[in-house]
Image (cartoon, rainbow, N blue to C red):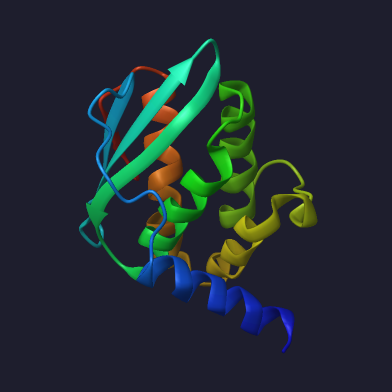
Length: 147
């Protein structure tokens, strides 16, 4: 199995069985994301305490890329400092758009599976939707859009 096949399997697995796909009733931050280009929608719930993301989950509907990206985001950020989440937002934006800072792809772990999306410009907004929604939630904004 080559790396491309592994990455494809990670995306398919997270789309079919999204991790942390649920509502958090006592979330400290909630933001809704919408991609008007394709109609992907999600609501991201964050429980932050003392600068640490204790829990993160999402609900929504959309394409395989948007659901897998949100699932991978939640899996990666649970238990991490909010500052690390903001840093990761910047890295993922650079990885997915090919713009901005150079990214250490190996350090991203499973998130690197999304790297191939940048070859399909129409799908980049699908993959970045959850990241924009996370950024909005951490900034205290209720709505995020990829436009």
